[in-house]
Image: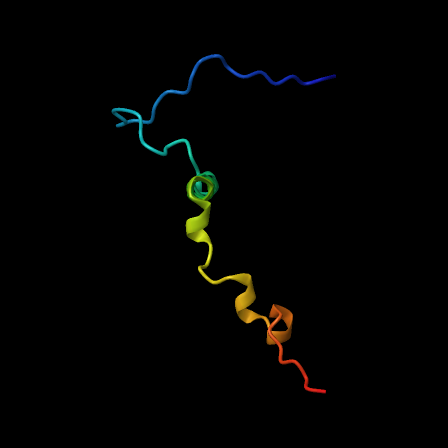
Length: 85
């Protein structure tokens, strides 16, 4: 014996007193939380994309003004005192 389950093709009637579609009526707390999390991730993604495009358009504005030789010692720059022999 096998029992089969079928869904009725008719939609459920609205609750008494309902006049129109309610916002968020089909979402439970977990679905709203996931929706908010995904929305936050999309906002972060858009901010990262904007930052990347700005760097690509003007890469030298993000670099520091100092040069690589500022923090080297005198011997590494080639400035040293000759020893008198």
